[in-house]
Length: 506
Ligand SMILES: Cc1ncc(COP(=O)(O)O)c(C=O)c1O
Image (cartoon, rainbow, N blue to C red; front, side):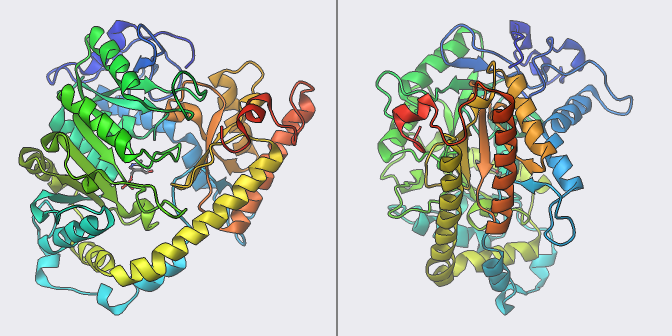
């Protein structure tokens, strides 16, 4: 962060009661330009997220104070994304445009998807598809989703249609779940680094905050891998948050993890769920990358495959088609919860987040086609993901850039800290800016609330020519930095950190 402490008054004070909506007037002083403020305080490994912190007091005369905060938060988080959309790389039309290695999209299987989605069975119109539907989603689709999840999550018994709700994406699901589970100003625990948009998803409508469980890139104590989440760390962060008066309502778990690519073992997941049960916490388990594990045999275990859930009434699982099918433009997300109060409340907000009837038909047809998914799509997708991952990690190795070598997700978490002279987030941002100036977009670690400056997320699930050009542009920036600074190790020399742990496996 930019070095300014979040005072106690910063803790979602702007959103503490439903009758006191967020106001930029009572926000604490600046905490940098990220979405969340806060710095480690009190208990080790715990930080508080105050989303509106750090924004200047100016509001638009046309917007409510809440509207102004939302606009400013969005603007600050999407600068790179907007730059990319204004100057997109295109081989023929705009070869000097920006290569986007920042947005988590799978661009490897458009041919397969377009072929499947253009088949005859996809094009179907009937009156019910053109009318208002059940806000949980059409029954035919929810039935198909229940069957799909039963099969791919290896559920011990058939999952039930009445526990399925479909909305227009997991983004909407986060937002809706936070709103129906929490009072404004309450919080979810989440381990850092994490997929940063969750901050906005929880805050924009629900005014729900995050309490961070800060994880470390260094393997310490009894840990066996970098950024290892343990029950002890969860306990410490929960106590830290509570001792500061924060009402923690739940825990968010990402599995497979974005941005780390880690997969929790069944035992770890069970421990986390038992921890949540002991403290009566809701758990949102986001499994949106569950079919994007590209090295066999898949070690991924869905919580829906457990023999028993420790606290089924407080466990809410989500999945969607954006990543595993590479169709993020078709907005589709699934919630599976046995809690009918939660399901009904989510469905009540479903009227703001429903999916077009004809798209519901297409998704049902897609998920129903198990032969195509198993025989054609998944094997090809996994082999393309693996090839792209190998290409990029080979490049990183030749550059001497340490990274987490994982086989899940669409991203690689890379360590560029040796390119920062004094190791600040300001320098990290400058490095991100330098990449952008050289027409390649990467995501800075600060956007994931990583507590250590210098980490970046690199998306590898793109076609080879774009990856080649993107890596070439990254290499150019790093070489220039090395030339400018005699202190930096030459490109092929292993930094001390990686020589201890082995390249590619920090
Ligand atoms: C972990 C995670 N959850 C949820 C989402 C949002 O997905 P959707 O496209 O379904 O809104 C993303 C998108 O990047 C993600 O990485």
